[in-house]
Length: 99
Image 1 (tube, rainbow, N blue to C red):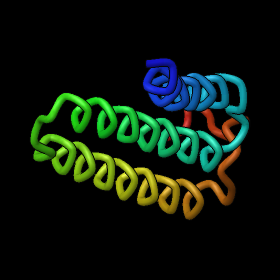
Image 2: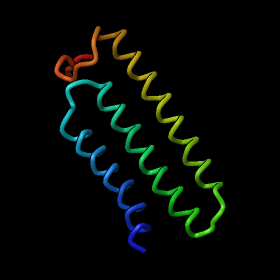
Image 3: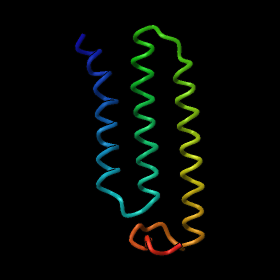
């Protein structure tokens, strides 16, 4: 029973670490996007452990993984667009008043 709790704690600690990086390291857009992908991977890991432990089917996991891949593609497209328009991905160079 102790080992089962350990398997559930590791993904939860990974989510907390990803959230900490997302909140604290917000200088570059690429760091923020990478931490979001890490959070999604950790949530996928936790859900796969939880759903397979309960004996459920994994169709929801495939749906979640599809949404995570779409989120990553949109983030990469946003990063490319920002770098093309502003020249870098630093949040300090962005201005709300500019169009």
